[in-house]
Length: 285
Image 1 (tube, rainbow, N blue to C red):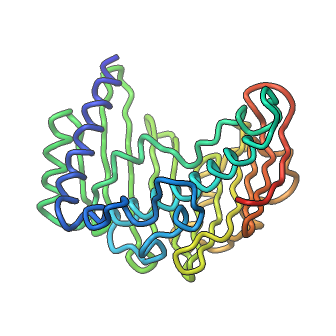
Image 2: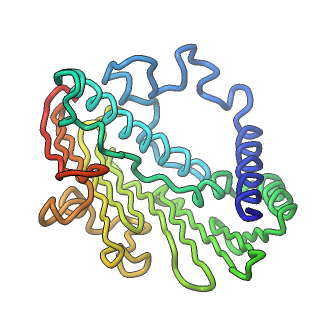
């Protein structure tokens, strides 16, 4: 229970720090009555997948984190709206659509603790003080390198290590428990409107034309023995070897989820909550 209380407090501190950095004109939504660029209140795909500067090169870890989450949100929203449209065409009570699939790509609670990291000394002192209230140790051992050490009350030691590459605008996050590697999260700006994401169980290759999302390949593994390793499989910082065939290779049945978008055609091959694997392909995405 104490651990979850600490997490809740830490998340509140993270959001508070983040809010302090996005007051007034620094918040792009403040100058856009319809919301932040790249988001929509309706189901217009063009609006839902276009964002001013979404393919820019990030200038700090915090900037890259923000960019990665906006790209992730755009991809998830594109899928969600397309699936809703498809499911609406099915007869009432037909469970053959996508409602039985849980699609929550590239979420990481641990990663959120690093959302405000940057090279501003005042910001980093705020972060250090905020985490020190919880008994957590924040360190900034080198430029664009940040870490958090947490001594758990149960004797478990947690370590979060984050790095940002200013040359590419990419970042890498790795966590460990008692010295053993845990989760990791890599966001790589490949240039030319292309990006790659990787976690222990997921890979995403996504491509934009300008600020418009035009294609992606996303896969998620399910078997613990088949997870990606933060050292062996790392793509940080330049994403060498990534692409659509890197994200999805072999048989679709070897993944828990496969989502592929090409233009306005979405292909899904995924395991539902229960029942047989669901395989769909439809246009209008």
